[in-house]
Image (cartoon, rainbow over all chains, first blue to last red; front, top):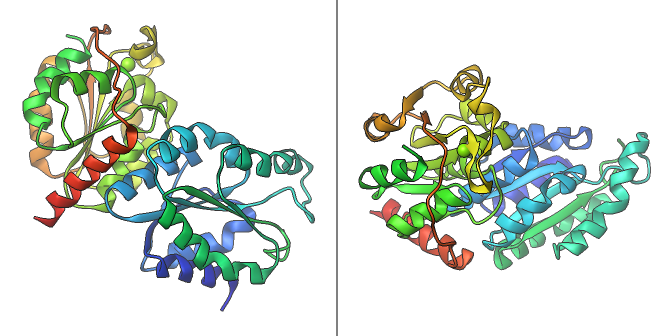
Length: 165
Length: 188
Ligand SMILES: [Mg+2]
């Protein structure tokens, strides 16, 4: 099973029925699998904070949801994470492409990479870093943890994990 | 008429519906006039009332009304294409368009100048877009609820505010009682 199929299978296994996405090159494969999945309603967002609002609504409507986005979005969504997701205590798995790590060809991406973990730590967001393909073995447990504690949870996936850019 | 007049007039029509209410004065006004578990008050996060309402409408069957503002829609402009392309016929977006950022002191918005939110919504692909005057709000909302079609209402009114207390309720309480009420309604 490809890593993209495994990620979607773990989403489905954990009853995630709505996924919102803002694309990144590294995430193209998994977004395509989300779109193809019959068990998941895929709703592309124009901006990541909008997507988090949709996820908050879906959660209150009784459906589990998740967001797939790039790490640059952490800069966009700090206020939403703090005043919506965390303040109202809602679960939100965030599958994040960790751009700007080893193998990155675009220098500007490094500018946000150096702040990514610091921002997530500052926000007290449980953060997991997938560097090797086997790291995805933990995804199921991470999703269960997220829905157990009703917190946003970050899964950073770097270029090595995706086997290139 | 100003926003608080519209909300007051709408209460008999929306009181039995699930309502997501915009940050600041709209939530404070609704909270003061008709607090109940079917209201979800936004205490932060300007702009996301329509996104939260869309997520709610897509996730379950009961009618969801987002009360939004012209300034907040301008803040989260990307919401209109998303709404247009993900039709939820149990969703009504009610935009109080007073041409100003009411909660922050009535600074003018572009919606009160050259920009028509009605035309923007239509251009984004929204299908049932109705612009009305404040006096027509009750009739338009009543028809929208009955239509069972996703509807965007742009309700024009004057800017201005009344004095209202802030909401001191805990956010988790607001969220929890709303979710319980909604789950119960869906279980009926
Ligand atoms: Mg306004």
